[in-house]
Length: 299
Image 1 (tube, rainbow, N blue to C red):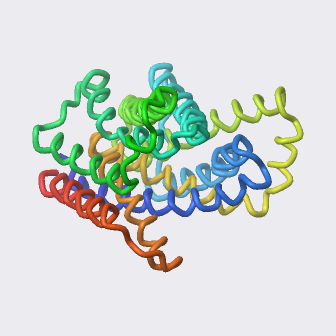
Image 2 (tube, rainbow, N blue to C red):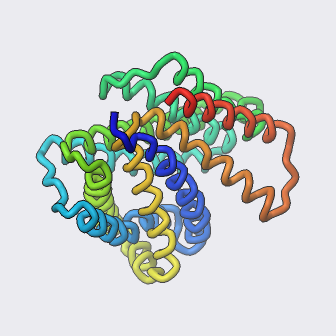
């Protein structure tokens, strides 16, 4: 095992924190850029930062980045595509009448990661890890109240929510596969190389899509470069953390620990906005912490 194996833990926590900041900025940009435009910001303005991160990594490692072969490119491209599909599904899920139900189902991602990683990467989780994942996911759902009661039998919300979680899960698995396929012994260099490729592909594809379907939206994205830089920087930093985690640990472990993002959001809401905590939220926090603790103690 790599002597620096433990670094996946701070890398993942950093990713979760940066993602919280990026999400907050993207919600603000949605008001002026729309959902597709605000989503594109994370890719278009994150790409230059990814290149900068890779350049620094090359200087530190004193070597050039690995040259991906067709197999590695295929895995990374699959991760990039499924990540875009996951984001689109999530936005569609959030527009359903059963918002809470849809969001709750997206949080099945770590469970789906464990399943897909076993099938695609032959990385089965242990019984203890599976239990930790289940506990943490139940905690996240608990924090949203009782979404099933509120949602009734809204099968569209269910399908979109599970679909979004599934695409995010596949994206994590494909990214880990692509990083491993690079065959680069310096893990952070492999991670940042894959990140630069993924963000480059996403920036090109979404720019072309908006150019053909909604040029005014693309023009607004380009015109809002000043406020978008922060979202891009935080998005690239978050992805750098996720990819570094994927380069060391299993995708299931990384995405489960990544659930600490909901704890960060909870802390911001209670500390900054002075919102009172509800009993279900407190119970959810306890379960998330317990699940993450079990995972880390057995990592």
